[in-house]
Image (tube, rainbow, N blue to C red; front, side):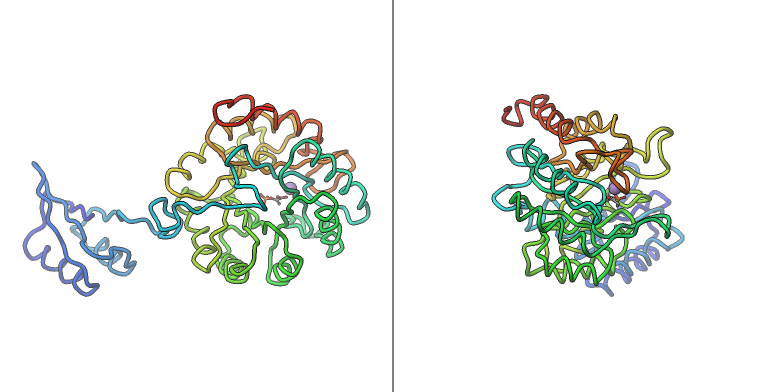
Length: 346
Ligand code: PEP
Ligand code: MN
């Protein structure tokens, strides 16, 4: 939709706009309002070059795209009834889908991870998380260890729960796919790494691995977030879950700026399930329950929560933000019983 600066385009201006549109097999329809005219672009308006050339004309105020830039992620797309499944479970259908586990798997202490995994299964968690390779701000902090992959694979074997592992590059992706990891996590730092997103979409297309795409820390709009997911889906893997996890700058006192309220905006625009991460959002174990309830109130389909049997013995983020499996059990019950019309309580 083209909006001119004046009430109406002059004949020579309209001719110039029509000329540009024709180059892209589009035409222009004049819509007469009471006081001013706007102009619709008929045809495929998704031509970025056409769009920019018209928007750059000196007598044009703005050009709005009616169609979204994410054809496949759009609620109205052919994928609108696509369901993301994890084994037998449809993500978000009968209860919030809960991913839980430590921030980081400590390869020196496999039993701590395995104990946590069993305890989480006991309280009703649907999938296990655990950092094998870690994106650390400080290059001298622990960076991860291939041996940690064996530990989370053992936990899957023992509990039967699907597993979620973050990958940051092609080598890690290859190892994760060989291990048939159920959820490939793309962290906030790589949420705008379009080459990696394409590679993940392409390489996981023929596999059963889903993708949990975190929201980039500086990601401004919901549309930018959805467009990042489009990169994965366009390469052939529609099993994408969107994960708000707080943005920056932080709200003083929290680790980030909690953004669970973006959930309804995402759900109005796209069909993809939204799985909120309250742990990185608030960054303190004490606030995780409130943030989780808020996320579910906003319509989230699931939660990804850091949890550890003994947070103080954990590495990475666990000492400050992991909740115990017992608290996780209480949280799961609280989320269900706060919304009895949406979920079975029990
Ligand atoms: C994590 O899940 O431990 C993590 C590093 O998350 P984020 O990318 O959201 O910071
Ligand atoms: Mn973490």
